[in-house]
Length: 172
Image (cartoon, rainbow, N blue to C red; front, side, top):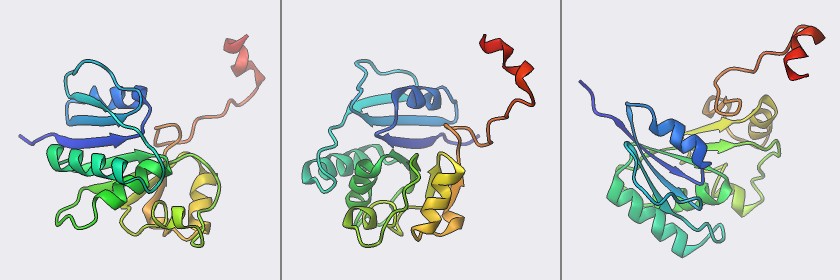
């Protein structure tokens, strides 16, 4: 028998978090601005205000949750939650793995501080890119290709294209 993986999500859509919590092999805690009032099986949601990218209040909040929950993996969505996570884990002897989720196709720049403390940080273990264009932009911006993978809207394979117009008939 194995222990469940402890996953902390920060800034993720609540529908994604709820889908993750339905898995028996995950125990999920979510920092979200869409806080749910009750605790559910395998899921705890607590409030999170993103503030600025370098917000001592947000960074302290993330660090406290990490220390209390002790996740194996942190999954973030957006540059602010990612920056807060990276800054909150400074000095931790055994920090959790950090996974970012990026949905835009703009290349991060080493000349922008906000990119250096988020997407370009070597402390990020993996980047889930919403499309091939997003992955290409990350690599073009300096992220090693072996730290990026494509996850189309949380799927691990590309959506299938219809072969011809007749396959679109279900849409009217």
